[in-house]
Image (cartoon, rainbow, N blue to C red; front, side):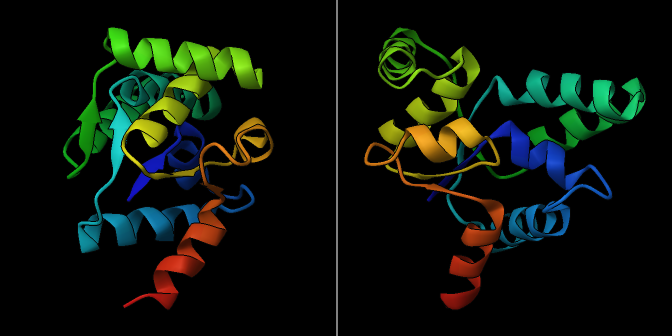
Amino acid sequence: MFTIDASVWVNAESPGEPSQADSRAFIHIISTRAIPTFVPTLVVPEIAGAIARVRGDAALAGRLALALQGLPLGWIALDESLARTAADLAAAHRLRGTDSVYAAVALTNNCDLVSLDREHLTRLTGVVRTLTPSAALARLRSSP
């Protein structure tokens, strides 16, 4: 099971960026194999804003956000319990607020967190298993 950070979704839609091909391939496999994947609902506005800023195209950002909502994902709303877990992770591991929400979703749903965020990859060791899209893709390709 996986939780996918917004950095991976944005990277998958950013031609020419490092790891873009691996991010796209990872998301494709997750979608086609129906692998359980849990994401916070905040991923939708986060991706829309990032794509609009990076690509300068509000219409594209809206289409991608809508397409994301159509994927077979487990949507996790930020309730009081998840907010408390995220706050604890933010404080203990010096994470940004939104980054702590992805970590909390992964932790509470026993998922691997797939991210390109350096802070996720370095600060959550021993708390949440974190993988880059390349590492997650290699793991999926090696399993039946």
